[in-house]
Image (cartoon, rainbow, N blue to C red; front, side, top):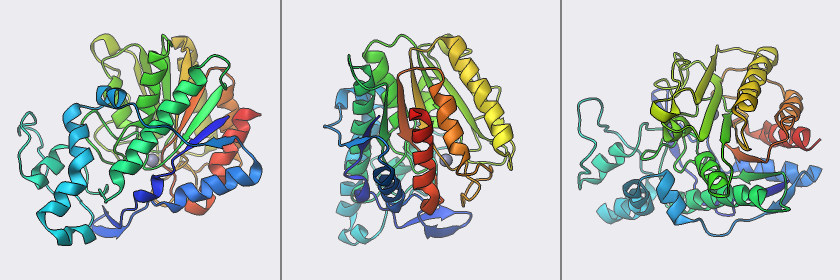
Amino acid sequence: MLIYHNPAHRMHAGRQEMFRGRLVPCHEAPERLDHVLAELRRRSVGELCTPVVADMDLVRRVHTPRYVEFLTHAWGEWVAQDPANAEVDVLPSVWPVRGFRHDVAPTNFAARLGLFSFDSGTPITSGTWEAAITGAACAIDAARAVSSTGGPRAAMALTRPPGHHAGTDHFGGYCFLNNAALAAETLRDAGAQRVAVLDVDYHHGNGTQSIFYARSDVLTVSIHGDPTTEYPFFLGYADERGQDAGEGFNVNMPLTCGTDFEGWSQALGQALDTVRRYRADALVIALGVDTFEGDPISRFRLRSADYLQVGQALALGGLPTVFVLEGGYAVAELGTNVANVLEGFCG
Ligand SMILES: [Zn+2]
């Protein structure tokens, strides 16, 4: 397995996020990736490499050009307003809900920040764009690798910030560019007729769902905490099945808080059956391991050893597979849990 790791990830290091009514240190921190890299090196899982520059045409197909333009310059605009802003992360505080206009982009920075986001837990910092776009390059390169003749069967984008909450034109949930969607789009470009994205992060992959919601060439399946109580709350319900040409090609499998591996792995079996029936040519796994029992912001009860079985199950379909790192906030165990999935997959 080729593992494209993001050499710029450390440039995105938020100071604080709004969490349950308080500003707290960011859960999505650079140490996360350090633990995974250290464990992969220690156990010699996969072959580590770094990406080339991201394909911006592809990025602007998955995300709207005006959103990409905004993200590219957001930090510069923030600091241009007041040099003292360089010491403070950017967090949105105003949003256009139902009835407000979304077609106009105000010149006011705070207003545009709200237009392109959906929560106040996702700070933009001086290096956010560089980290996010290099992560996008990891996802694109990983997908190109498994698509190439004689290439590996599986590759991974080992990157942060994560991506699955990012939609066509909005960031949130610690995510800015949707790496799983970029991988899926790359696989399609490389000739796969049908691509399945299976999201096993604790949280619903709302961004990925929304990007492909009206398409039948990319199946999106997500197993996640029930959104009636769990983030992102406003998407992820079982009755969201896709629309227009995409009708029937989005599958949500919400599970109640406290679900253990027995219950979770049954859902995984059903999800993999869905992928098989779809006759996917390639698979993208949005790999969050915040399903772990020790995760500080999630409430499933998977144990470290369970992730070996997760990897084994994901390998059974024999498809070209791109893993993309999403969540997982029990930082000390993150390396073990991710390495277990990959080791289980590689058998
Ligand atoms: Zn998550």
